[in-house]
Length: 85
Image (cartoon, rainbow, N blue to C red):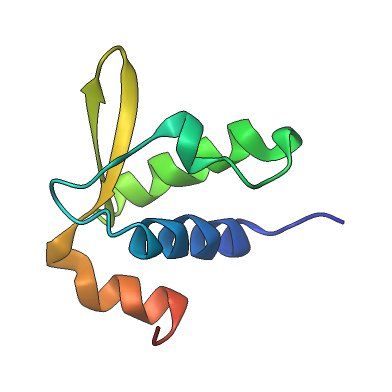
């Protein structure tokens, strides 16, 4: 079953909210895609990069790999995407 980019978007954001990755809390790209089928890994990272372009996620290099966290300035948009948690 094919999943949509919107579903991937929700899944990524929900995972980061659940792990409390706001600001100083962050998650590596490898851990971000854990829990989903490996076939979707590159697509999930593409969606994460799109979320960065929309200023919903922030990324920074850490130990040679990319880490992500939620942009606290986009909190309203984040909760709108995933619905009220």
